[in-house]
Structure formats: structure tokens, C-alpha cells
Length: 108
Image (cartoon, rainbow, N blue to C red; front, side, top):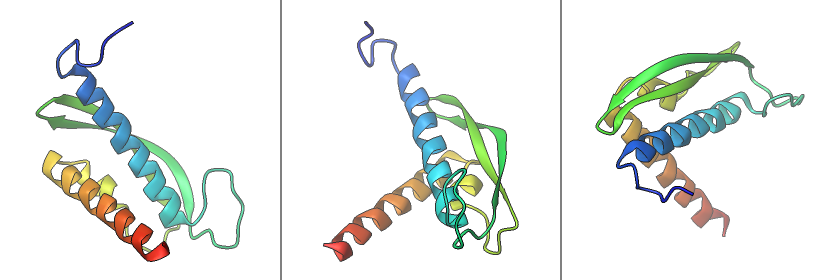
């Protein structure tokens, strides 16, 4: 059994990649108005696979799978655009987290 952090920052880079990929998928579902394989009247576009992208960060190079969309009236995903730089990705994740906190405060 591996202890987290035993291999230095290797796991941190892998964890960042997982978090960014998951956040981009969730944002794609929000922009499209429906999740994968879901048929609904609210759907505003179609998922169109993923585009591989490398992001160089202080903890190493991250392999990202940037979701592609088609027939979407709105602009593309902010996180997908942020995949070009570490600072942009960090800012987008912070903004997404802040929006989530605000939404929870409004709901309660």
C-alpha cells in the first residue's frame, strides 16, 4: 500500500489532472444542459468527444482531456480555455468553487 506523498509531488500532479478533467466534464454538462446519454428538452448542444492537451505546471506536465462541444449557442467552457496555462486553470477553479459556495448560501 502506498502512502500518499511517498513519491513526492508525483501524486499531486496526477490528482490535479483528475480534478481538472472532472471539473471540465461537469462544466460541459452544465453548458449543454444535460449529462452524457441524457435526452431532454433543455439540452442546448452536443458533446463531441475529447481533445488531448498537455498542461505544464510546477508539479509536472498534466495530461488533460478537454471536452469538445458542438451546436452550442453560448461560448465554450472557461476551464477548457484555461487548460492553456496553470495560472488560468487555478483562477477558473477558484471561480468555480466560489460560485458553488455562493449557490449553496442562496439555496439554504
